Image 1 (spheres, helix red, strand yellow):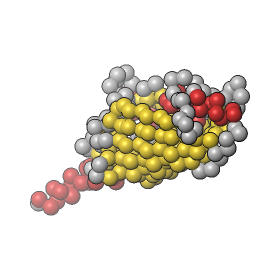
Image 2 (tube, rainbow, N blue to C red):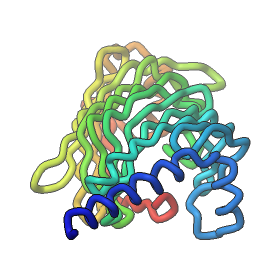
Image 3 (cartoon, helix red, strand yellow):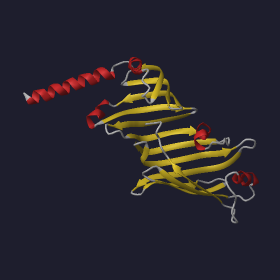
Image 4 (cartoon, rainbow, N blue to C red):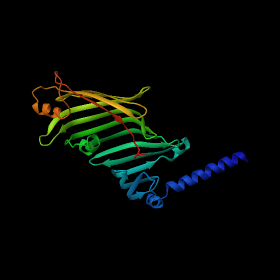
Length: 256
């Protein structure tokens, strides 16, 4: 009788899961609409909770467009809510396997995509610089917990970066490799060729405090346009290098 009870409970859970994932996504949104505690707002929804799409999703002050999802319901048996997600941000597009554990941690796996730097400029600097180029994202994993970045492993590449106007100035290509170790997250920045040399190091501790140091210099000393651009960042030393040191704390209170 006990074994029959287990089988019956499993069958009931499987049936309820089947009912939920076949529920039209728009109907579920109607049920949840008006809940101010929800972290996101969805618009023009179609499909089902299992597999659907939305024309736009607002998360805090950020808007994602053409959002598509495909749930992996059997991950629930492992204590996770998991889905493949694909969306556009401005002229760029991102795809990932996203999940949340019952303990509250949020994780992304195989995060891939490309975003124009112009769409990210408001997050990078409060003073518009007219950034051009693209950010290529290739992350094996990213884990968030308690509104903090817990771990990240992967590579960020900036391709064909430039600044302007009034004069559009090419500054080259850059790569940052990120990995998580016992002392926190470490990111190593290097230039990948081009007129501007760059070396940098990012150290992010478990409590969210970070320190970013960077040195920039000209590969071609005749580039007076770049020399003038560097003066907006800092004063060159005797050897022509401009140093930047930035500290702060990364918190994701509005996203989780």
